[in-house]
Figure 1 (cartoon, rainbow, N blue to C red):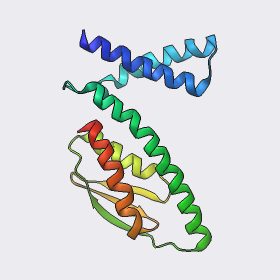
Figure 2 (figure 1 turned 120 degrees about the horizontal axis):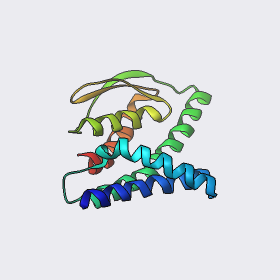
Figure 3 (figure 1 turned 45 degrees about the vertical axis):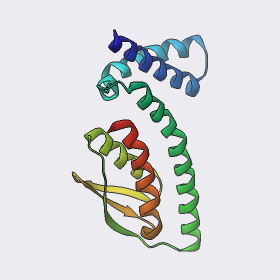
Length: 155
């Protein structure tokens, strides 16, 4: 029974996101229901945590979204500033991480890569090789913030 409730909850979360992005109309609700069901079937195993803290982890997943959006906007503005000012110190650095699950490590690498001015080049068991536009500042700001929040969800 618990799995059915978790499946239904994830389905409704995907459907709500669809409606928020596409709008409310009968066609969108039908298309969103169909798409949300398919996405839930294929991704449910990534969201099944075998602990009693399922709802807490789901909460932290939704709390991660505003933080990610904030970092995304900040990175865009910082990248624009660095391009216009010419204050760029690019390099490739190895950054350690504390993620235990493969999905958590992948989420961390993708979160870093999706922000402008950074690119995850390689993924190792306990480290990431990342290209940064400004190594000195970005290393601590980006990795630790993402890692701390993603660890609440995936580890």
